[in-house]
Length: 364
Image: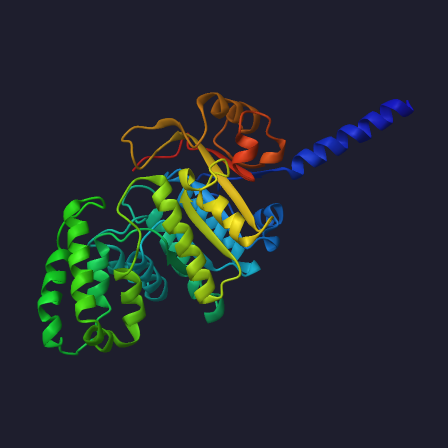
């Protein structure tokens, strides 16, 4: 009898320990959206001990906007209000203006990255705006750019101009060009976009003293945009370096002690020593980075007109292992600490995995 009692205690301990290493996240009743979690995610992740919380996403348009909002909402009471994203400095400025004003015209014409019509990103920003309005000035959410500039850079350079002030003669031709470029339907990797940005940068620098006076208090933002070193490329290693450098530079300049960052998982895995997360861990110190990576199943994805069986930086065998071991058969979400994962390199790739099913999530 005593042996049975001790065995029962041991099994209860194992179940409790396992439970502490996983956290189910529920959807709202009758809805696709994630339910409120109190401070359970915050306690599960123990965010107070980290300087950087990095979420390696899969660019899904239904689940991940909800997940990112949940993380921001959970982290904010702990003092984490600086959000770094895979966008340029111009887009970051526009998003920050929106979070202050609620003017959606800032996010369209052109449509900003992560404000796509399909999915829940419009709702993500709306909820973030509402949250920001409830916060004191010192605690408001601030968006930071880390990646290359896109077509919205031209719109931003126009909006940064002083209202009601005549354009200086040396800048008049430049402003006319920026007006023209702002109307062009450039794709992010278009050679014409790169050439236009380079031409604007060259022209501003040729008239730097005049431009500095003209833009006044906004000159520092203009400099950040035109001097952005990030190249227009899909190559992961090159972007890892410039995104990491942008994070560190901004943290030092703004005296940021804690941040959360949202980047494609290809940029964040520990198994890549040159990833953003690996570089940050090397710079900020051992145990300073919490690295989260997502694997999503039956996905409505921004890159595909039809649902995908799964997306994430894992092989098919690893994907099936995770789904069968941890994910409920009904549409669900669960956080899993990688220390309990035994399959493949998953244990070394991130500190926490977010597993989710988009099954049943309606398409729009």
